[in-house]
Each structure stands twice: as structure tokens, then as C-alpha cells.
Image (cartoon, rainbow, N blue to C red; front, top):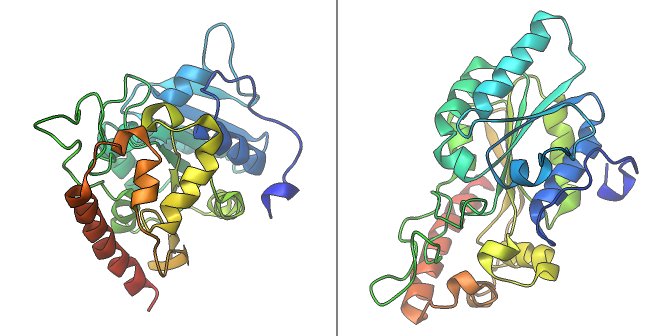
Length: 293
């Protein structure tokens, strides 16, 4: 199925996210694929703050908001409850940001994968704690300035390499894991369909540019995502049957400087820092290329 073939029925609308916010794209496409027999769980994050605003709710399927670290545990428990009742036609899905996944919720996600229940965990990765003031997360890339890793005379921004959630999921021998991007909706829709039909847990790590936290015009969300892929800082892949399939990766990556300089969070970087990030990218790409051999 392609994005253009999805139902015209909407299962989420009226959210209060920023113009150009990628989380709306992720949730809208996901729920169109999953349909009305879906239960949604969302922890403290941008999505909960913009879709659960009392007295309104933006979902037109059953949905709940929950504690920051508990997405994986909640999904596993809800799925187990349906299983105990003999209900096997409901999709249980969680939407969580990178902070609630790579940091605060990682333990619960790991345990939930081990439990083996039927659920889908979708991490929309905007590379920081955007909802609470743009603080760094372990998914924040090297060089990015945030409110807790500010660039200045003594700092060039974030110093730690971005945590690889896809590889962490793979290490659990999960039935299905994938990377995706809001800038490539057909690839995302295909992976959502596959995740829906998997028996056991499925994990999607979705690149979700944040115009507010990254500092770019809200009309450029999709373009920024494409630039990340073309310069080799993001790739599209999936893991199933203990094998990685690379769907799209830059074979001859473009220079990373245009991508970095298109965002306020990287404007402070100089040539040495850009060269260091380029070297890190090249090392990561060699690993991806090896999966293709």
C-alpha cells in the first residue's frame, strides 16, 4: 500500500502541535494503517501534551496517556489483557519520543520485548526533550546545542554520539524492527503495515524533524528529513528473521554541512567539528554498507 491509497477517514485530528510538527504525520499515517480497532498509549511527551488537552482529546480510537517511563510496560499489559480475553483483532500501539524511549522508557521497552506480546512501539525521534524545554536526550546528535548542552566559549554543544535504538532493538532478537522517516511516507506506510501483521512485538524508530527545537522554517520539515538521509545521517532499514535489509541509504553521501547549517541548533559549528561529525558518519555508514553485502 502507498500513502495515497490510505483511507480518507481520520482517526486523529485537532491536535495542538506546532505547525510543521512531524508527530502529526507519524500518528495520522499510523492510525490510517491500523484502523479503528486500535488502542493507543502515549507517555509524557510532545504527543501527549498536544493530543490530550482537557477537555479535548484528538484521537477517535481508544487512547490513554501514561507515566513517562511506562510505555513498554503498558503496551505489554494491554496486549496481554486482550490475549487473555481471546481478542486478537486489536492493534495495540504506543507513540513515544526519543527521551521517553532511549532514556526514561528504555528499561520498560526492553522488558516488554522480552514478554513477547503483540504490540507496536513507535518512537518518533526529534532528538531532544522538546516538550519540556529542548533538553538533550541520548538521541541528541553530536554538536547540537540544547538548553542543557548549550554551545558557547567552553562548549560546542552535545558531545556524546546518538544512541542507536535500531541496533538496541535488534540485540533483543525482536520479531520486527525498522527505521523510517516522515519524509518517506510510502516506506513508512509499508513498515507500519508489516508491523501490524507481525506476531509479537514490533519497534519502529521514525526520524521526526522538529522545527521549533532544531530551528528551521516549519514548511521545511519533509525537506530536512530528506537532507538527513541524502547526507548519510539517517538510513532506512528493517530487521526481521535476524537479518537486516537496508531499504535506502546514501551510497555517495552528500556533504553534511548544508544539512547542519539549515538548522539553528548547529549554526555555531566550525570546520573542525563538521569534519569530526563527517568522520563519525563515515564510520557508521560502513556498518550499514556491511549489512548490504
